Image (cartoon, rainbow, N blue to C red; front, side):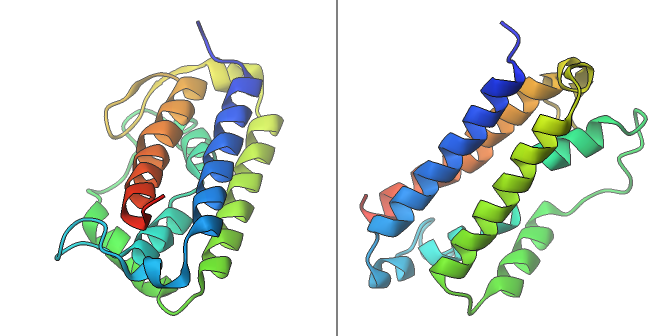
Length: 158
């Protein structure tokens, strides 16, 4: 079944609501808990990463309109992620959550404004996922954001 616009919007809202609920239940000291072992991010840094990547729909919608093969030069995702987390160091949990809420709200607006043709177009993302744009947004939200939300839930003891 091909996902409808409402399915994409519901997926984005669910991810936002899950993350906010987890964060609101966490005690302040829990944000220093390690998430990926001694060499990984702590919970606060993972939240910063989520803030920097919490707009999958806008990204996918924009990328899917580019001509095939125009993805640009090689991308160093590790370096980008480190830079984005470092840029947010010192922000409060509330500030990171505000950024996430704003990003997802913009994504919802982008999906609402997208035509059905744009959402149902078959596309292959630069990371290899193929499907309709709507399905890739859902898969990216559930896979990337959802995976990190699960990691955060475990590290925060939620």
